Image (cartoon, rainbow, N blue to C red):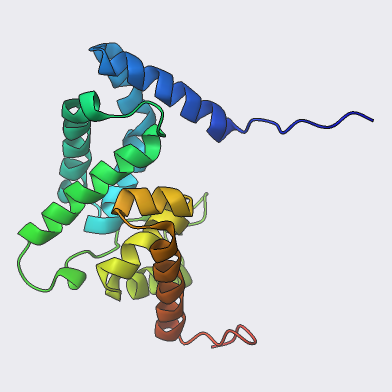
Length: 196
């Protein structure tokens, strides 16, 4: 019997394509970079909205992410995945935006207007449970909230989250675990039977 070969996923193909297009953009091809912007704009905006709240700040941060990405392309290493590199830039832009805001930083990043992430696909409204989870997430310190957002809401791997936040994979796993525990406590969830 022959061995079955692993099949490439859609994500694998997109990442290879991103790397190829990023190499073209890196050599000055503005049309290639425009293609990367079109492919990643929605995800980068959602990441920024998750960190800053939906609206002008998120839109500005998403735009600034692509400006910085264009300026940083000469330093991009084409052997590394493009998506996590770009998300790392977005996280840094959002962190700078948060630092510019006055007052309590953890309360300055409401997770509102996130219908795409919290609502059923056919509805324009979020569910009460989703709102409760998002509010509890918004109350977490950035050091726990950001890994949770990148891992669960942006579907990043542990290594991608670690790269985006400048952490080791081990530290990322610890923050994800502690963040989940804090969310459970905030929501009053009993892990043993799933009740509140």
